[in-house]
Image (tube, rainbow over all chains, first blue to last red):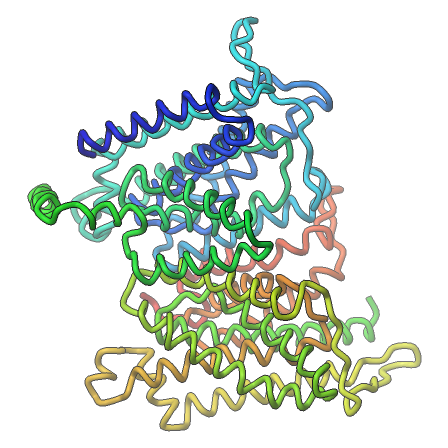
Length: 327
Length: 298
C-alpha cells in the first residue's frame, strides 16, 4: 500500500474510534457489526485474494466459534473472556486444520464445492443434532467479562466498550494481514495463486502453505464469529450455513479481492446497502441484487477497482511496471 | 422394515433421485459447456413451481399450466443468457458467483412481488390422482409413479439428443474444446444460448412437475441448489451420465438415511443426522476421486 492509502486507513480508524462520542447508539452498534464482518471478510480474503482458494464454507468456522462461546457460557452469567476466546479461536483453528487437510488437495471449482460440502455438513450437524439447541440455536444472556488478573479492563455490556474492543481487534488483524502479505509466506501464497505448478517446481511444498493459510483464515473467522456471538447474544445454524458463506464471499468480491482494505470496504457496502434499501422498501433485496449484478458486469475489480480507474493513468502504469519488475 | 415399506421407500428414493437429476443435468451441462457456475439454478426451479401454481389457478388446468409454463421458462432462460451470462463467459468464476447470487436475490424478490410469500399447494391433475394398491394396507400415488416415468423419459431423450443427433454433436464439441469447435464453424454462441435456456427450462419443468408433490414455498430453490451441486460434483462436472448416477445415489442415501435407525456406542446417528449423510458421501467421493465418478481427469 502507498503512504496515501495508509493515511486514509489511519484516518478511517481514528474516525471509527471517535464514533462513540458523536454518534448515537444505533450508529455505533451498526459500525461494530460492519467491523466484525470486515474482519470476517478479510480472513476469507487471505484464501480468496491471496492463495486463490475460493471457499464457500468459510462461515463454518465463524459459526462454530460462536457456538463454542454459547456452550462455554454459564447459563445466566458472564463467561470469562480470555479463556473462552482462546477456546473459540482454537476450536475454529483445529476444525480448519481437519477440514483443510482434506480440501487443500483439491483445486479450483472442486475446492469451492468441497468447502461447501463441509460447511453444509457442519450446518446439518448443528441444525439436526440436539446438543446445541437444534434449529433454534442458543442464546448468550451475558457478554463475556473482560478481566485480566482480577482487574476489569472493560465492560462489554456497554456498547461503547464493545465497539472499541471490536475496533482494536479489527485493526490488529489488518496490521497482521498487511505484514503477512509482505512476508515471504505471503509471497509464496501469491505465487500459488498465479501458478501453483511453477511454485512446486521451485521446491515449495504448496499443499502445506495452503493448509497453513486455511488454518489461519479459519482462526481469524473464529475471532469474528466470537465477536459476532457477543454482539447479538445468539447463535443459530444459519450463522454457519452456505448463505452466510456466500454473503461473506460476496463482500470480498464486491470490495475487491486484490487489496487489503477491499474486503472491509465490501462489508461496509454490503451492510450499508441493506440498511439503505430497507429504509424505503420491504423488497430491499431487489435493488441490492441489481447492484450486485451491475458490479459483476461492469466492475471486474470490485469497488476497490473504481479507485484504480479514477486515478491518473500514469500512476497505474508506474505501479504495473513495478509489479512486473518484482515478478 | 418390512418388504412393502422398503419397496415404497425405494420408489420414493427413485422419484426423488430422478427429479434431482432433471434439475442437476441442466446445471452440469451449463457448467461443463460454458464453464459457468450458476448459483441461481435452484431459483429457476422455484420460478417453475410458482408458475405452475399461478397458471393452474388462472387456467384451471395443470396441463395448460405446463403447456404455458415451459415456453415461458425457455424464454426467461434465453433472456438471462442474452442479457447477463453471455458477458461473463471469459471471466473468472468469481464474477459468475457474484452475478448469479445477485440473480437469486432478484428472482426471489420478484417472486415475492408477483406471487407473494405464501406456501401453496398445487392439485394433482385428475388424470393421475388415484393411487395404486401395493398390499392390503399400503398404496402408492399414481402421480409419483408418473413423475418418475416422465423424468426417466426426459433423461433418455436427453441422452439420445446428446449422443445421436447433430445438435448433440455440437454440444459435445463445445464441451470438449470451445475454441476448436468455433474454428470448425460451429455457431458456439447459439449452442451456448440453447444449452443455457434448455438447462433453465429443465430446472423450471422439474419445479412445475414437483409442485403437486412438494408444495410451493419461498426459498425452495436454495435447498435444491446445494443438492444439485453435490450431484454435479459426485457425478463429475459436465457429465450427464455422472449426474444421473449421482442423483439416484443421493436419492437413495437421503431417503433411506431418514428411515433407517443407526446407533453407534449409544449415540444416535440415523435418522437424527440424516441431513449430513449426503455431504459425507460427497466428501468421500471427492477424496477418493477428486474429479467425480464420471469426470475427466484434469
